[in-house]
Amino acid sequence: MSTPGINEYDADLQKTVRQTSIMRQLFYFVVLIVALAGQVSGAVEALGIPLIWAIPAVGALELGGIVVLANADVRRRLGEKATASRVLSAAIAAFAVAFNWMAHDNKLMAGFFAGMSALGYLVWLMHTENQRRDRLRAKGDLPPTTPAYEVVGHWLRHPWLTLRAKNLAKADPSLGLYTSIAAAKAEKRKEQRTSAIAKVLHRKIRSAVDPSTADIAVAVYDLDEIAVRLADGADYEGLTALIAADLAPARLAAMTNTPPPPPPPPAPALPEPEPLPILDTEEQQALPAAAVRPAPAEEEQRRAAREAVARAAATVEVPQPEPVTAPSPLGGLRADLEGILPATPAAPRPRRARTAPVTHETGDVLDIAEEPTLTPPTVIREGSLRNQVHQILHDNVPPNDRRDVVALTTMVGDLLDLDDVERLTASNYVRTWKNDVDAGRRTNGRHLQGILPVQG
Image (cartoon, rainbow, N blue to C red):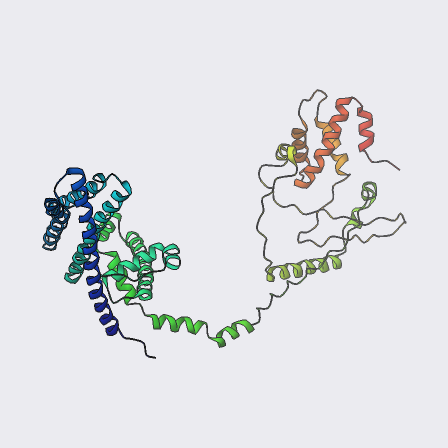
């Protein structure tokens, strides 16, 4: 069974229009007879008008509204508003309905006649409005009918998009239901893309020239038009080929199978220094100077070892960590340390050699182990640091001296030419000496007895 074409539907529509016109005329004739019967009976009963005069009088009243309405329709088709004729027609129809309602004592009958009179007038009004819209649509003054969009799928889910599709269908009658919706979606996407391009162009112009020139350029040129031209002239094939080259399976496989770069070779380990034995103070004082000094051959070997370590350290680049600033754990001792240590860093002093334990055997010459450093050894002071500090304080501090620990430590460090580490150690000795002196537990004789070496 073949589907009927548009011509068959048009022929059927024309046939239906003719049938509807005949039925409408018949319906209006019946309604008019019923309304006239009500008007005549009401005029005879209420007004006492003879029947022969009541029929033409109420007929003129009932048909008067229709005649004036037809006159208004003609004037409106000619382009006029015909406001006076439309108002007069409505007033005549309202009077006829009211007369049918008031002229009958039986209100049920009165309502029936009044309703038939109003129904006849409304049917004629609708017919004239339909004819006027058909004429306007044929002249192009009225938009064509739009597709019937779905209530839930279109109006409730996408109200603004459906309204846009309806407006497009009004402008282009060839658009159907789904074609108008697709055109509305494409138009919305194009507007969003054009707006984004226009914003970027605006920012680019403002960044390229001064603000005044940018404002002039923005006012003169249509950024939306430039955006449209850019979108129309876009090279989709070139960009697609560029992206496809990066997404080629062979390229992705090569990137996936590429091994990670090898880690950098580890830095050569520096030789660890041998542990150094420490001599007691009394044993260190008892050693002769010749025993402390190393042999010339050993000294040459140590110098060669230090030079090899220096060359290895120069050839290896060890990454230095970033300096991290952390709060000092010393807390309140910072002020004391700043007062004890000198303001400017002193020249690096060579570290003193530490000696091995001495066995008290006659005639043995000790081989002193020395820490492998890059600086040559220096001469060892006589006596321990504690005894030297106490001796300096006893010789240079009067009984009623009011200097604090910081000042006394600075004096001791300057007289003994101490480095930073030794100054920190000496500060403890100064503090204990000052506490003992202040408490009165120390005498000159005991102090001298504690710091002088014991004679065998």
